[in-house]
Length: 349
Image 1 (cartoon, rainbow, N blue to C red):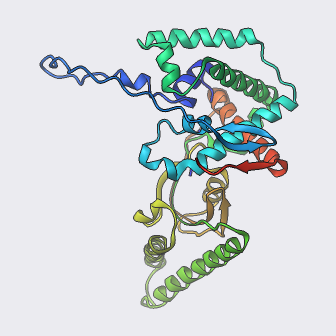
Image 2 (tube, rainbow, N blue to C red; image 1 turned 60 degrees about the vertical axis):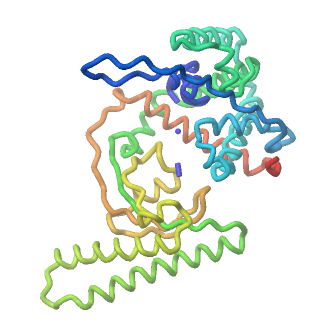
Image 3 (cartoon, rainbow, N blue to C red; image 1 turned 180 degrees about the vertical axis):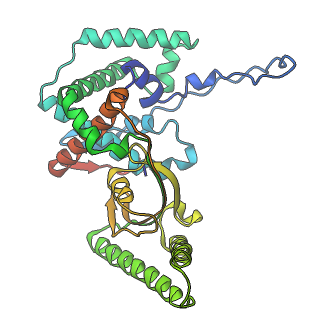
C-alpha cells in the first residue's frame, strides 16, 4: 500500500520515468586487485511499445503505452498483479491534467524546451544516447514534452496553493509527518468486489476483532489473581500479537499474511495510503482499529510499536512540507474529480 521536489528534469528522468536506462552504468566493487576485463554485455532489448487504449476518462483516451510506461521497473512476473493499480495511477494523472486545463494553468513552451535541453545534458553526462533513452522508456519526444509540461503545470498549481503561512500551519498541525515518528503495525485486508461484499467484509472484520479480543480476555482471566499489572499487560500484548497474526495468516488478502500481517516500520507520510496511515498513527500499541477503508480494500490495523520523532523546525524542512502538502493536494483533486468523472476501463488486450 503505498510517492516531488526535485528539478523537473531529474524527476522525469530518474523518478517518474524510472532509472532503467541509467542503471546500466554500474560500478565494480573495490578490491585489492584490478577487476578482470568484463565480457561484452549484450545490448538490452527495447521494450515493445503497446498499442490500444487502457481507459477513457471523460471522453479522453488513456493509451495503453502510458500503463506500460508506469510498469517498466516492475518485474514482468508481477505486472498482471499490479496492472489495476497502475491503470488507476494513469487515470488519476489524466484527471489532474483535466483539472489544471479547466483552471487554465499555462506553461510557456520555451520553459519546456529549457528543461528538455537540461535532460539531454543529464543523459549525456551518464554516457547515454538520447534516442535509446526515449525508446527504452516508451516515449516519443512529443510525449516527453507533454509530460514535462504537465509536471510544470502541477508545480505551478502547488506553488500557488502553498504560501509559507499555509505550509507552516500544515506543518504544525501534522508534526508526526515531519519529525521522524514511526509506527510498526499488523493488518488484515479483505478486498470485496461489490457493494454486498463490502458490507459483508465490514461485518466479518468487526466480528474478527471481537473474537480476537474475547479470546485474549478469556486467556487473561486464567492468570493468577495476584498477578501484577505489568505481568497482565505483557501477557495481553503477547496474546493479542499471536491472535492477530494468526487471523491475518488465515484471512488476509495481503501478501503480508506470510508474516502475520506485519508491515514493519513506516512513517506518517510517504509510504502508506493516507486513510491507512492516519488510522495507524491514531492507535496506541496493541490497540485494534475499527474497519479502515482504502483503495486496496477493508482493513483491521493493530499497532505493535511506536518510535517518537525528534524536535523539528519548519524552516529546516520547508521543501519536504511542500512535497507532502502537494501529495495531499493531489489526492484531494483526484478524489473530487473521480466523484463526477465518467471513467471506462478497457479490458486488457
